[in-house]
Image 1 (cartoon, rainbow, N blue to C red):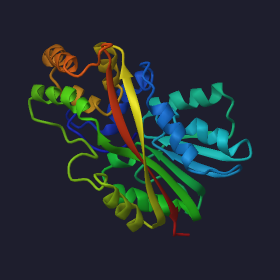
Image 2: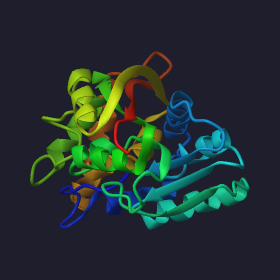
Image 3: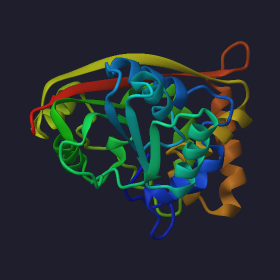
Image 4: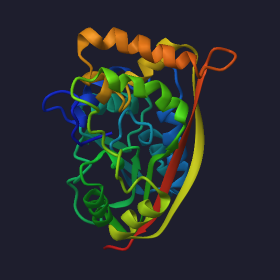
Length: 281
C-alpha cells in the first residue's frame, strides 16, 4: 500500500504509516493479505515469460505468486513507497531464490518506467488509497503494452460487525475522524463507478468480480494487533497515547457484543477484483 495523505500525525503520509506497520505487516496469524494477493494473481491470467509490474507490493503478497506464474523466463518488478516494505519483500524474494524479481522503492501514483514496459500491472489493495486514483490508472495504462492487462483489488461492502467495533475508536480522536483514502464519496463505492473510473483511464473490457473472505480472530488481542498493521493504523496513530488503553478497552467491549459462541470475532470482507485491458500503446 502506498501514497496518500491522512491525519495520522502532523505531516504523516500513508507510506509513513505503513513504514511503521511494516515489521508486523501480515505477521499476526490472521490470513488476509497473502490469500488476497494469491487470488488476485490467479485472476489476472498472467502468462509464462511476461513482464509484470506489482505496484504497492507491501510484503510481497502479489509479488511471489506473480513470479511463480511468469516463471524464470518472465520478470516481476515490485515497487513500494515504504523502504521497510521494500527490504522485507527483497528478503522474501531472496529466500525463495526468485531471481526474476526486482524490488525497489517507487511511487504507485507515477511509476518511473518507459511507456509500454509491461504486459500486466497488478495492484493489490492500493489504488483506492492514492491521492488521485484516476491519474494513477491512466499512468498504468501508458506503462502497459497494447492489450496489456490490469488486475487490481479493492474493498467492497464491509461487514457491519467490523465497524461496530472500530467506530468506537473514533470517539477517542481529539480532532475528529482522520481523512482515510478510499472512504466517503469515492469512485470505489460501487461497481458501476469503479468500472467508469477504470474505463475513463484508458482501459477497455472492464469487469468487476466479487469474492468473500472470512477473517477470524481468536481473541480481542489478536484483532488489536492485526489492526495496527493495516490501514486502520491511520486511526490508531491519531489517538493520543494517554487515551489508547481506554480506546482499546472500549473496542474490546464492542467486540463482546458480536463474538460468536466460541468467543471468536469473524468478519466477512467482500473484495472486488477489477480486470481490464489497456487501449493505449
